[in-house]
Figure 1 (cartoon, rainbow, N blue to C red):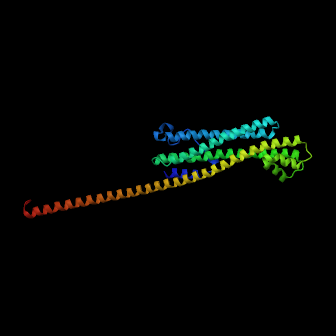
Figure 2: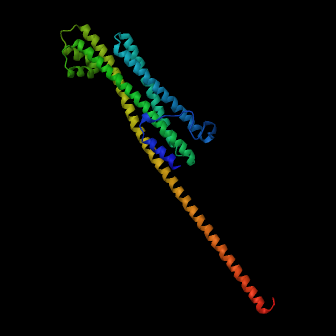
Figure 3: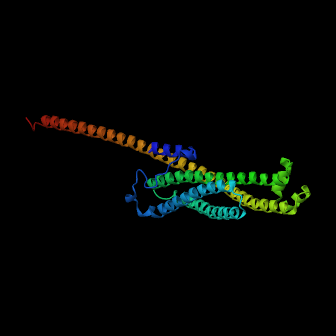
Length: 295
């Protein structure tokens, strides 16, 4: 039991890349042995697994879209990529929020039941939390990479209009968003209006993508803070369980000592009783001889 708790505690201190999940079964509790009290818990586990797979799939899709966006020059196809990205981010962020709610439910449920049930639930909760955090971090990193690619592309667009623009001027255009047209017009008076308008449209579209990605990244960052609190609290729960188990083991040892003492005391009592009986018999025999009964 102590070894098992030590393993769970070690799991809390491992990085996400070290965590693997056996979705099929708990090593010590095969699915066919699940009892009714765990049905709801494992239903949430299965749903969380589905969400993890969905986030992982979305991460790969964003990476592919980022590669397409980097080399695409056709405005219609760029817009199609942007629309697809927006749909993926919206859907995946919803999945991440659902996953967070499921983890909270699993955490609360892991404190219920007997010691064996708590051990199973705590083990799965800790492992699933680490796995969920890992795939969500990958998802966030994919968005950050996409955002960086967009910013580089916007800089190239600005350079077409403002050949001698400094890094500060380029950043000012990017950050101006919907006001980019005015900034470009003021900075470049000798360029044709059509060139400036095309550059503005391209920059504004990319700016909207950047804004959406930044909002998504901030939301995910807050989730990471909440996840850290969940894992920390679960670590405290494991500490309490371990303390309870150790206390129970100490009580068990003390109980054994008391039983041994009782057995030893019982042996001594029986020995004394035998001695008393022998003495009584001897006294009776002596008295009988003295009275001449046995003469």
